[in-house]
Length: 382
Image (cartoon, rainbow, N blue to C red; front, side, top):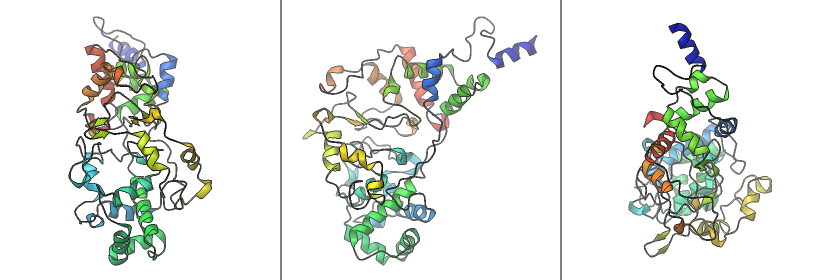
């Protein structure tokens, strides 16, 4: 009898155990299962960046890794990419907003899975990973070097000259700006390898998709209930869609965008910076030229009034390793994020924006379940 009982439990055919214990696997509907399946598989197939001629090439990846940790590329020799994007902190810094010379009003985003993003930066001012790598090299608040300084370092330092030649097949040329862009493309080649690991959710999603009830039942019930809320009544998956748990676009989520001295205009400002940039996909440094299919989107986006206060919808993967949250780092914990959406102040939402969001009004158990699900999107069980 005990053997039969165990077999029935493993097959998901026995719904109770003892005095009314709950069934390990929730009875997800066909629609819920389809929505859950849409958040995978993970990792997704790698899509090469045609705008970067060295994307995916080992020599460029190695050179980019060297550059990423090299503080001599900054104006004063004290700041590297890794100073703010720390590998041990999921390639961000764990601070609400950056400090030091890079001080600003925005949270430092993780670089994990950055190669999958259509737009880079909280405001989407950059339309490729290599452009997002060029910008901090020369930005005054970041590494603050000039194209001339960077090109001179590549020509002068043997390790940089050797790495550049290996990555690009020739020594750096006499013009400084192309060398600067090539540094960005090597950095992008390295960052494209930073793919986050599989999570408890991924194991559950795959087990559910193949009909493995026993394996799926290993996923905690609190996380299952939170997932049902996420894809259902909470409508979280409208914006946090797909395998990366983001639609890659921008939204006003009721976080104040008034800052000391003015307004952080978000996507509106980002689009205003994107179009005139020489480093966008319409510019002279796109290695695919007009054949780049992603250049079309850049060509047709334009700032609208509703874009004020909109910020990029972040991926939820590795969420527990990338606190604090929101573009301004104003929410310290996963529970704070859940509370924000539960108690959302609709009066803070832009009057001309989308009206997707509404207060979730979660009770204590629902809030805990949603937090449990969100934590299952990270490796390491934190």
